[in-house]
Length: 331
Ligand code: PBG
Image (cartoon, rainbow, N blue to C red; front, side, top):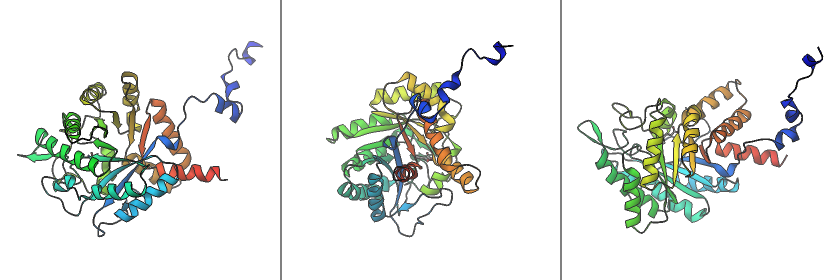
C-alpha cells in the first residue's frame, strides 16, 4: 500500500514553481530571431488592408520606411519584402525593373534604417499577369527561361540594397543562377536565403490575396513540392546548399515541424522556418472569436517551431510579439 502512494520517480519536482520551470526550460526564442514580412504597394489605389490577414497592411513606400523604423525600435532585426506593382505582364518585367516597387522601397528603407536586415523575395508571381512564379511557355512554367529573369531580379534587388535575396519560385537551379549572377556583378556579399523546401500548400491562400498572385490557370504543383514528402525536402535542401545557399527555408512551418526537424538533423546551415499566411489567419480568426488566447497561442507556436529546430522564424506575428514583450517589460 505504501508503494502505491509513493511514486519512485517524481518529474513534477521540476515543475513545482515558475522559477524552477524556467531553470530547466529546454527551448527559448526571442524577437531577434523573427523576420517580419512586409507588403509594399506601388499604387495608392491598391487597398491597404487585406481581409484574410487582419493586422497586416500593404504599405506605400513612405509608410514602409516609417514601419521599418518602428520595427527596428521594437528590437526586430530583419524584414522580408514583397511587392505589389502597378503593372503586370507575362514576363514579370516589374520584378527586375531597377525602379520597381521593392527596389525603390529598399533604397528608401536602407537610407533611413540601414541596420535593419532587408531580405527581398525573388519570384515572379506577384509581377506576372498569369500569376505563375516563372515564364509560361505553351501552358507550362519554363524552368530555364525563368532562371534568367530571377537572376536579373536578384541583381537588381541587391543593387537597390537588399542584404539578402530569397529565391522562392522553386525553379531547379535557381540558387546557382542567382549566385553566379550576383558574383559576376560584384555582389559577392549578398546573402542567399533559399526557399529550399517549399511545399505546394493551401496555407498560402491569404498571401495570394495580399500579393494578388493567385495563378489565373492551373496551380503550383508542377514546381512546388508535394506536401506529403519529407525525403524530397532533404534532397531539395542538399541541392540548394550545394548551389551556394547561405541559409535555407522550410515552408510552411507548423504543419511541417517534422520536415524542420529532419532538416536540422541533416544540415549545418542556418535554418529558417516560414510560418505562412494561412497559419497566421487561423490564429487571428480563432482569436477574434474568442476561441483561442492569441498571445499564449503565438508563443506556443514560436516555441514549437524552434523546438523542431529552426534558427530563424519568418512570421506575420513578429511585430505583435515584439510589442507584447515591450509592454510586458514596461509593466
Ligand atoms: C512567392 C511566395 C509565396 C509565399 C512566399 N513567397 C506565395 C506562393 O508561393 O504562392 C507564401 C507566403 C505565405 O503564405 O505567407 N512565390
